[in-house]
Length: 51
Image (cartoon, rainbow, N blue to C red; front, side):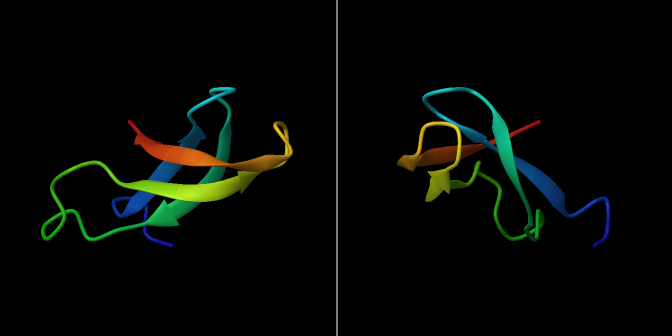
């Protein structure tokens, strides 16, 4: 994966970075938020894009 398109996803509840994803930053300007499974909380929680 290209480093300039790589983003880190952080759990909204426990604040741990669980996922890495990629996005086209030229097209999508706002921060990405997806509901994903957190292995630390052991449930599906919203994950937000971090810097």
